[in-house]
Image (cartoon, rainbow, N blue to C red; front, side, top):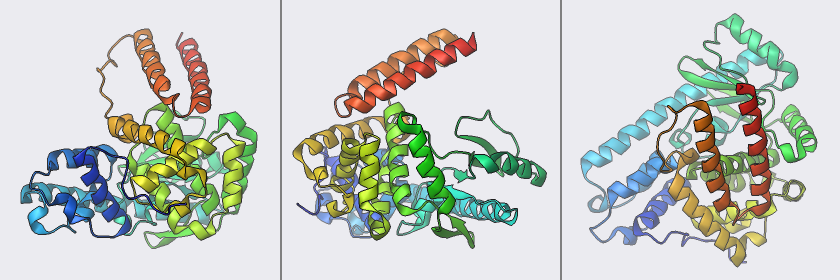
Length: 381
């Protein structure tokens, strides 16, 4: 088995250069200056990819390893540096908030587990460089109601949105907090997954220090699976950026010796996700420079897997983070049934393209989309 894939899946020059800068920032290495030797670097396109993929601070860290005469003009460099500083300040705010919420709940006898976000940021060479979002805090079904009541008593809860099957979200000091009763609903095998999730998050002893306070995080094996399946869900229902794949690459690399590979593979087979795991990991190797030995899968190196990874790569660069860059006309001012019809058509188009690389999971997600769409229409009536 070859150990590394540093060539990447990109063919366009700007994408190749962008990925080289991203690898440099992600793994604390110098970018290959030979890729930037020509004076025709399209910095506008490269920085556009950085926005699309939600990895701007990492690109800045890679960019400053280049000789000064190969970098973009100073005004461009300063804008990127200012954005990286903004993300650094926001990360500090999120760290403080996560630490405080965890400490307050713990004092009331409630174990909370931080999902994704700041917990995964701790694995980065510089945690403040991970482009952050919100705080996802798991308390479980039994403690969910009591936690919300405590938040109200403490004056933390401001405006609460309609709860979903997984969580409820609210704003606290400008920060979005999602309080989870379940971490993820894997509907195809919900009972077995829920049992594993409950046991894993109940018994975890993994911690990170945030805001000077210890915060529980998921155990490594569950975390690797959870980050993957969460990213895959977003890929199927809208789109993902390379930020999510950076998280997965670092979890598999930094926590490799603490991950139970046999259990991880057993769970992937149980939920029918082995082939999807393979092309996710293949992209992590080829585009992001993860060592292939970190993938917990020999078939990730197959030629068939590489072909799927190429298409996966293309989807990511067409759609961007959470699919926000997919071109399409604005239609949210249309009547309800018109909006639902347009949305249904868009889902059909997306699932048609996804079918080529993950047919079984596409059919499952498509069926779930039909069910939820019909339920939404009937409820609206």
